[in-house]
Image (cartoon, rainbow, N blue to C red):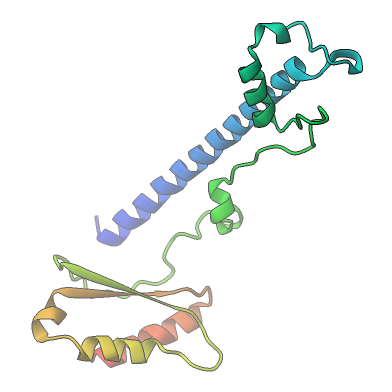
Length: 179
């Protein structure tokens, strides 16, 4: 199995874990809603009076205050605002995964297959209208290394673009620079 196949397999495994974590998050969010509803039933005054429901007397005053605070009940006027605690899911931080589950797969990989180095430098780049600093950055890095350092380093260039033509152009420039 090649390292590319291993990476693809690992990415697929991570996507499955991500989907599982998101489903767990949604289940916990539903549990929180149900708990909030039960808390509201205990703490809401009966018939607009200051008396709480029959379950309320069994709850100590400190616990009542804590539950009010957790449920968002305003202690001053007894009104529960129409908001709910919403924690971000993994899709909040990685929204592109909702549209395209294969978005974590590499579209293009150029490699010399070097392994066993102690330093890996990652260099991200994107398409810029006016100036591209990638080649200047690579020249500066490589020219500043000793022979020993260059033999113990792998440079990983991440081209953050979906247009394959641009990615291939960058790969060709890097390959020509390397020659």
